[in-house]
Length: 510
Image 1 (cartoon, rainbow, N blue to C red):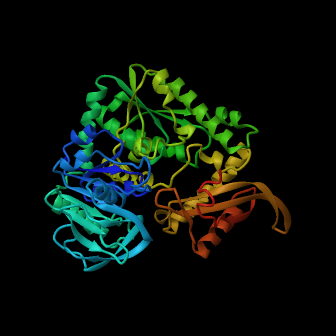
Image 2: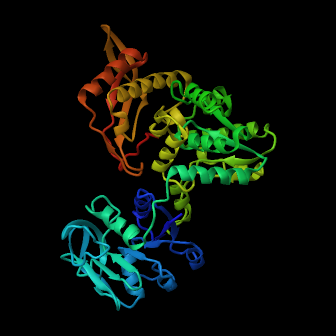
Image 3: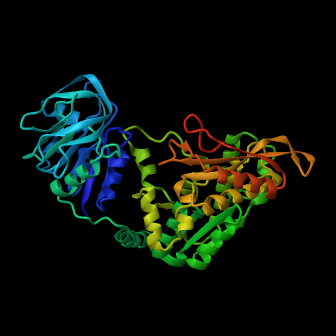
């Protein structure tokens, strides 16, 4: 399988580079710049991309790379910091720019031979740099320039070295996709060998070899990642897989039934459903602090999962839906991830139960997981469902969690989902949900005074959940939501709409 390796120097766009290449059906992987040279040398690569990064090549301890990489006779593309590093290491001159370039710039192309083949003479690109190239290393030629960057692109064709001062991977660079395609196909001569069908065949075989005659246990949440993991592992080993689904009493309306229907009836997976709602609600009694809620829910989930897993014979493996961004975050040049939410962290079971880990999705981004799920026959209802937090409705029920308050929230949430889906807005949104506030307000219903709860509605646009904008839903849709919730949910007499973006707010309220 052809591969383009991305070497990360800490850019916020590094994952985008790998995703853009995978969108071309070419496999791409990311490694940190401080990985040993042997890690690069041992791979059979079609090309290498050096990412951007926040550092300057002049800084003490600035990230760098072994110069032997330039002697591998493999095409290399440096982007932003990657370009400056190539220049610095190969004897060119880099200096602080008199005028920093951030945002859109007009690129004027001087050479259309390969990297810029079939592009316009002038095109909009996205800049983000404070240093610039004053003198190219020996043997390089200029490919393009901007008003503030005399060398916005350069190449040493004999050594197969190319460099860009701008970011082709972001959508703001109008012809960025063409530029990357030119590098991947015209320069690296890659073939389109990365697709979900071949991934399934390869991963299925690897799971079979790894597991042998032993059993595998999988913690199932009903979300995209755990569902796709379960279906893929089941395809490989059949009844040797047992899935455990814990009903903690904090699920959405009909959630448990949907999971059982899909996995048992559609995929014939061995599923154990544990009704632990009383146990969770008992532990949460009187608890209002959101972090305490999370820790209680996470800790109780692990205890129950461990209790149930111990009942299974010959289980030696734990299947988990770890995705590639999680892997990147833990090995990135920028350092390990600061926090892993406790309700997702079942890693402690590995040592206590002497289990080995199976992570069949660890090479995939979220959009690829959805494509994989589609190939495996999983419905769009599961694959394109909005993110649902691990602690469930507990962190959308602000304040104390009780059965009465959960029932009110569950009914309101059901109406929100019905109306959002019915209006055609569901697939346009990153997330939409109801929140039950810990206050009551005065109202008038049927000529009588009421004093009841407030429901807040949240709907946001986002690409990755890191930032988000509130959505300007049509007024008639908001009106229907308000009318239905107040008329159909006993205990609610007021509905409000959250118009806070992230930052400063978060998507969830707790």
